[in-house]
Length: 418
Image 1 (cartoon, rainbow, N blue to C red):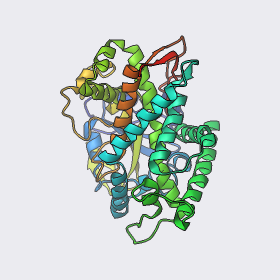
Image 2 (cartoon, rainbow, N blue to C red; image 1 turned 90 degrees about the vertical axis):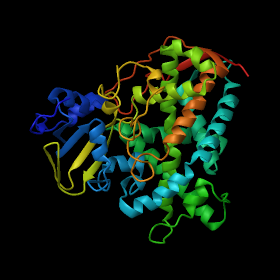
Image 3 (cartoon, rainbow, N blue to C red; image 1 turned 30 degrees about the vertical axis):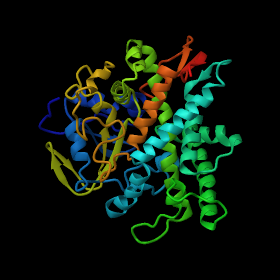
Image 4 (tube, one colour; image 1 turned 135 degrees about the vertical axis):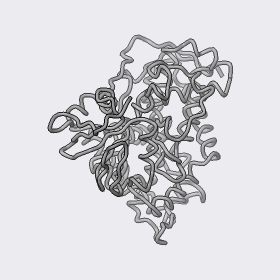
């Protein structure tokens, strides 16, 4: 795409309805139309700049130019993120709290979560031989159990289904209006009340939390000002550890879809080639829709690519479009795991969960966890069980944010090969 001399401006008074109709393709459609990496539009009556591509991502994650405070809409904080959570912080406060999240998501923790996930898949599969299952629903419940067990959060067996559904409703509310948003808000309130009570019980000694566990470390975390977080805030941040793990169920469902639609790769996956397992997983993250875009506000006035970025203006970075940018990826709308065999990449061209350095920017610190849980789940699906895929609607809509195969991916005739 070539940049025009003047910043392109979206036609019409407001493009909110277009965003709801076009979903993941909203920014890319216009960037292609205007032949520009950025354009100006209005959403919910607010002037916004939308950007796409590697260079846009690089500038977007420059903390001298952008901040996250005030970027997340209130309705997203009320459902997905929680109010005043780490995603909304900047500067020293953000970096101080980010160190805690980095510690809790290091390679040791990634390995532990992968092991727990494998154990749960195998235990669950032993009960599947007489029935068909909806993989997305099973993954939701399994990852809810894994996340809570790993974090040290008490979870009664009778509560697993409801807790998993609440986490799922919070995630599903991201781009939602109406009933989906209301359901997500109700689920957020329920989960926050549950986790807040656990935090209070840990602090009072009524519940013992193992030192080093996410529950313990967040309950007793001391912030940059030397203060312990209020129980409400500690609950929000613990949820920000648990919820993204449950959200991996979406990627797992798309992994199963990729395995079904591209069966030519099954033999390579069954060969126990660890490198190929990672290549396939990375291509799932690149190819299938997960996060559509991410927002930030301009910290101070600056000029980039002939566009004036005014202080406090909201800017959206196109995640889906960047992961399908033909300047970065050959044949971007084809599923080709082998593209990652020689992929050298950087922090700004492959951004399924955002870009930048996870230690110093707002890039998701749980990316390693996502990758390890996806790999162990894909290995389970491709080598440890046999199953058939009955007729069903496996299509997914790019206008729905977040999206998922409509059937949730049903499998039957399941046999555990262990």
